[in-house]
Figure 1 (cartoon, helix red, strand yellow):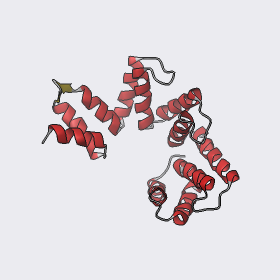
Figure 2: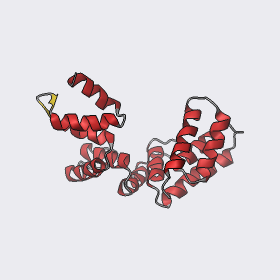
Figure 3: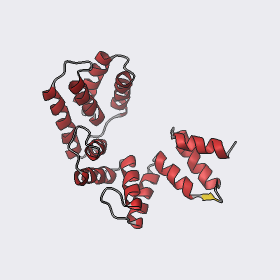
Figure 4: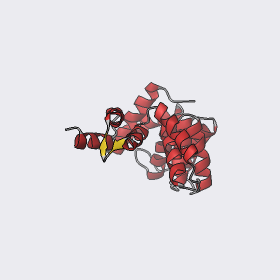
Length: 196
């Protein structure tokens, strides 16, 4: 089940409360509601809250439960959950570090339409990272899929390819503006540097 706009807004509010240390109790209450509604990132944050005792009494059983819920949502085909699982397995963050499993979930997320997963899969094929071979055709395929979704990091990356003599041409500027409009800070900085 993919997340709705409403649950995404509730999750962002809960995450803001949690990440700014504003109100762990309220963050927990909102995060639990989102996690119970199937929001993958909320499941992960709720697990962290149970692990650390922030906003709730520390409970390792509940921590494990919510990590298992995240994995279950990923197995059910949610691309955001697959992305979350991939990232956390890749870095050994609350899941055992396992490059092959991380790659499996990354590919699932990319195939499911997750733009960041598509961008990273393209990047890994471009440079032969994390047990992926250098494969320019696969890399370009995934960059184009991420581009069609308007992934800001992909827009930025493709804009850099459009530079001529160390300066952005009009196509590069257009891509940088799209990425900057989505809040991609590197694009903002490059635009400021070259278009003042």
